[in-house]
Amino acid sequence: MKPSIIKVGFLRGGLEIKQFMRQRESVVFTLLFPVMLLFIFGSVFKGDLAPGVTFSQYFVAGMIASGLVNTGFQQLAIMIPIERDFGTLKRLRGTPVSPISYFIGKAVLVFVAMVVQVGALMGFGAALFGLDLPNTTERWLRFAWLILLGSICSTILGIAFSAIPKNGRGASAVVSPIVIILQFFSGVFFVFSTLPQWMQQFAALFPLKWLTQGMRSVFLPESFATQEVAKSWEIPQIAIVLLIWTVVGTILALKTFKWSDK
Image (cartoon, rainbow, N blue to C red; front, side, top):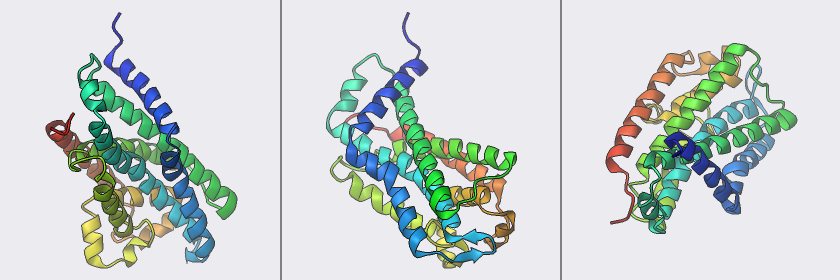
């Protein structure tokens, strides 16, 4: 009996995870780099941003959102062009394996890496910087759908953007600056409401700003919502923006994805 597309996709996901774990540089950068940033920033900035809100608390929320972009969008937008250069995608296209299974495999890798990264950030933050974990069922449920929807959105956008770099060698130079700029503009490293208005408006066009805001609504006290630009968490708007970008990314991926460099 021929395995289903979904089953093959999860098997492919297991292979993707094994291949990822063999690349020590990628493992360190993807899984441990956010923890190292938390240690550095948490050690340097020890003051309170607001009553009951330390900088570490604020920073963890931003790094979890940023981690979704790093493990999904950035990693896939760089690795897929490299696989295209090596002929991996062209050979895969010539096998009975469905392209959908390939994409499911990538999604599995992103989700697993993201879960490990988020667990490390939360554990490290709670142990060394007194990070307060969500204290209600409603917040845990919000955290779960933000992780799931953010992971899907980031994965799809990474697949779609992988058509932009002309080759694997230049992919990092194209993708990484975009991610870094969005991190600075989206309130990952700084309090979003203190940024220039034009930065806020620019960041609001992209999903990272909304993911970051959503994570703040999970980890920060309800009183901090008044520090947001809209004076609220804007939960419905967060879901709408992420869904719109997921749909847009899917359409772009279907229309622009390339299996070879020719």
